[in-house]
Image (cartoon, rainbow, N blue to C red; front, top):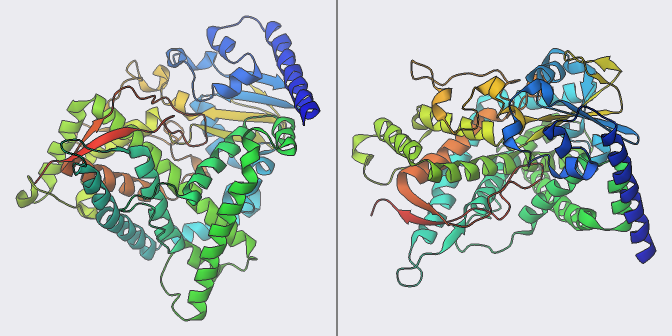
Length: 496
């Protein structure tokens, strides 16, 4: 193995030297360009860019060349709109992305062109029917009442005298969203959020590991991650075990659904059951779609809620406004006591949704979108791209540009999302692409807002959250932006 490691080190060093050589012939050079002058720096700083550079968008669209690949790093809403909406059919998910995301198989996330269009039609029909909306809302509110509240009460109870146990809110939200997604997506509640608190849930850990491998692959030249896979080193060494855990889990769920149908008890609606009923695809595609559903539903909601409670702790005035808004819409008898929310009440919480939109602007769960062009073409900004160009759209940079959001773009300001009439302000998707844009815009957007509002309102109204000091809350460099070491806090009840 030692000679192979030496070979791998030599190859990476060669790439590094090529980058250094290339960077020295590009002039003039801005401070922003210096950050991304080398491949290692470019890959490591996708999520850790210096926010003070988010001023003039025209200066920071950066073309980086490596052997066999070009990377156009940009945060320009014009390019976002062009590639995702206006000229959607001229672009695909990016060169080599389907190969890098082979674990997702033939799921909709790995498709382009006519294949994607046909699969999208199937999913749109599911999301548009009344049964799905009712199922999703019921699953969310039921999970809040039967799982989230008991767990919060458990951690809010003193354990040893006056001492209280801390809980990792990030993991709590990950388990909540995983369970909820499985409920309305697979018709199964894995109950990873429960009392007693399971210390380790292999399938939840496997989802986290898979996202790390996918981002590592999608932002590196294929030769790098394929060599790592061959050598069994780096993040690739966990891939076989991760894929097996997830494959076993999805296989079990498919077998259960088939048994329910054969026994005549398969009328219970869930997304995967509907897909099996309407699709003539072989067994592998439903398995791939099951995994895609889990990935789509688990990480984005939990990441948004985690950042939301960190920012709420840092902005007590925003918390006070949310609590006042809640008091204004719930029955008078419940103002100063425990209350569980229904969908009608949640739909009235404008300031709460505005605060969540601010979190999505500053910390979009999926910080980067990747595109590729089928043919050589010139973008509206004048940049030339071709089939070997990886277009990386940084949503996190886009959400902080002063040229787009104003001089206070780095501030947490929910009020920017509220009109003079007190209604939620709509922003075009190419400006606020937290849920993607154009034909690929997230079908589960409304479900995601319902889920985040249900959890946030329940906690803000019924509990006090004290964030532990001295934590490393920097975002990690993965597909779904989460905090490096979680978000630990103590919980206490507001009402006796």
